[in-house]
Amino acid sequence: MRDAFRFVPNWRLDDGQVSLAEIGGGIGPHVDNYDVFLIQPSGTRTWQVGRRKMTAAEERDATMEGLDVRVLDGWDADRGGGREMEEWTVNPGDLLYLPPRVAHCGTARSGDCATLSVGCRAPSVSDLVSKRAESLSSLQKFEKEDQREFAAHQGRLF
Image (tube, rainbow, N blue to C red; front, side, top):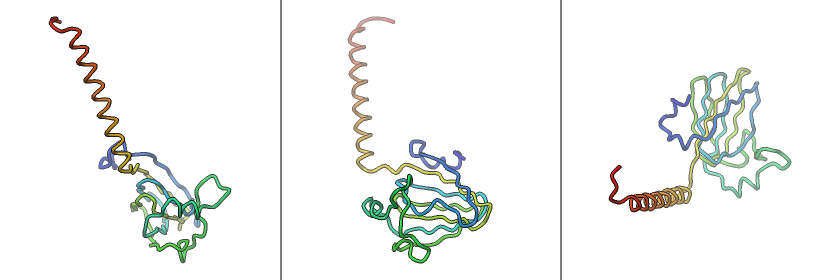
């Protein structure tokens, strides 16, 4: 499957999951902090997808308490938890893309429902600047080490 995602740099590929469900099953409404590609190899699933990004504060306020996962409370098929949303039904061979921080909820519509989820890191601008500065800093360190090594052996033939 990795070959199907060659358009995404390797460092952005974060995780892959398989979700198997019977009719009416699913993980529940939630938000991911990265780009997600949902591939439907078998069965049918309906996705309710928010029309805007959800802030971390909105997610905190809407998260159900007492669970090990961050499931949103107050989500229903009519209103999407009070959020504007669209509904998509995916069939075998379909792919659905979800941007970071967009609330979504998938519900199996057939008994043989399998969905592959590929998550890709979505770095912030500060992450990118920080990594670049770190990269340049280590490059400068190696240049200084190379200069010292060269100075120590100046005039020698190897």
